[in-house]
Length: 356
Image 1 (cartoon, rainbow, N blue to C red):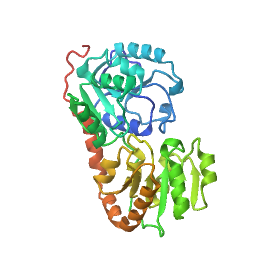
Image 2: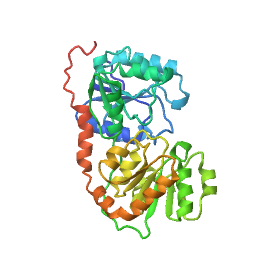
Image 3: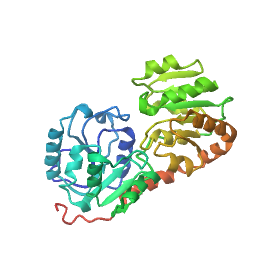
Image 4: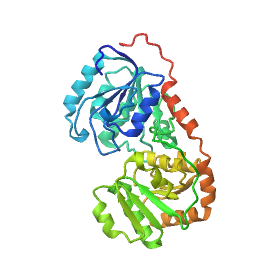
C-alpha cells in the first residue's frame, strides 16, 4: 500500500493473514475498498503468504514482517499511528482485543468509526481482573459490533452494549469446491483436523477411540504429536499436516468430524466439514456449536472434557446418522456467505468529514 491519502471504506486491523480472512476481504473488496493491516505471521491459524496470494483484491500492509508473537509492540504502535495519518476511511475494524497496539489506537479513533469484529464468545471470555477491565474499556470505545454467532452476540448483550450489533454468522470464508453427496462408509470413519496442541484436547479423542475401536483419522501437527502417537492404538491413523486446499479428498473419504476443544472461539474447520457433507460432534466450548450444530441439527454437542458425554454423543451419531446427514446437505452455503458479506458492507456512511 503506497498511495498516500487514499480513501478506504474499511481499514481492518487484525493479526495474521489466515486464509479464511483473506477470502473474506476479497469478497468485501468486490463492492468496498479495504486496507488489511497485519502484524506478522503466526501459527494460531493457517496463514497464507500474501506475496504468493495472486488473487488479492484489497490493499494490505504489515506493521511487522516477522513472527507476530515476537513483534516489538511499541514499534508496531508507532507504525500504526503513521499509517493512520496517511489514510482516510469510513470505518476501522478491530479483530477483537488481541493486540495492545490496536486496543490503544481505539481510544484515539472516533467511537462512531470503531467496529469490533468479535470471534470470542461468552464461552471463553472472562471480564475479571485488569484484563477484563481492558476488554470492557475497548468494547466501550466501539460504535458497532460484528460478533460471529449466537454466544458471541450474547457476550455483548450481557455487557449491555449500546451500539448496533450485526451477527456475521462466521469468522471468514473457507475454500470451497464442487461437493457431491458420498455414500457413507461401513463402519463410519471419524475425522479430526487441526493442531495437535493441548487446547484441542485430542487426548480425549484418543482415549475414547482406543476404547471403542472405531476408525479415527487425525490430520495435523503440533507439539503433542509424538506423545499422541504413542498413546494411539492401530485404529487411529495420523496423516501429518495437509494443506487446507488439499483437504477435499480427506473430508470426502470420512463420515463424521469430531472437535473436542477445551476452547475454540469459532472453529472454521467445523464449517469446512459440514460443507463437505460430514455431520459433526463438537464440545460445548466450540464457538460455532450453537449456530452450526444445534440450530441446524447437523450433529451432537458434548460436555467438554467428559469422555462419558463424548461416548454418548458418538452412540447417538451412529443411531441418527442419516437424519444428521440430511440436515447437513440442506445447508444453503451461498446464502450464508451472502449474509456474512452483508454484515460488513451494509453500513451506508458518507465520506464527509473522514478526517474527524
